[in-house]
Length: 206
Image (cartoon, one colour):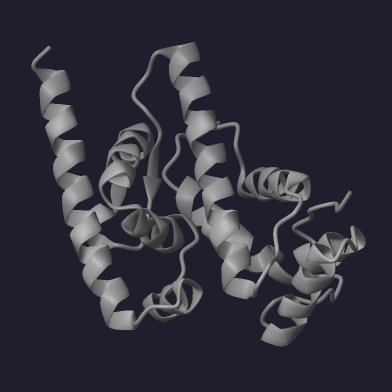
């Protein structure tokens, strides 16, 4: 098992900043071909980026929260390790799957805490000014409703919101134009915010 540690960069281990994109793609290809150790070699390279994403999501949780960025990255690693039969294409494809895994972990954690303490759902942060502080459970419910209407927008939201990919990187992963990503991202954000606000208003009236 790969030991996820905050000290890896202090030890001079490789990071994604240091690694060429083709090295990530090569390791993904080796992993797809059955090399079980390829994931262990890949994680130290992409760890910094995954941890940055995780820290961004958890920055607004209350003091004493149980899920730390390092733990979240480790949970993502475990989910990825269990995934078999995926033909990894490139770095972008990896982050797309990691984004979905992170969403599942964050939502599951929020549900457990909500059920145990009967408190307000967890709030997470995104770099989008329009969605700077979002109720995670409300967002997840709205995403499920959006999936029934437009699955392509869900993929864009997961990559932009949960994986923190840029417009350009999202376009590369989905093999569409940056202009299309921006248009669909703006439409999805507006729709999701309306749904979240509608749900909050309905809850306050009950």
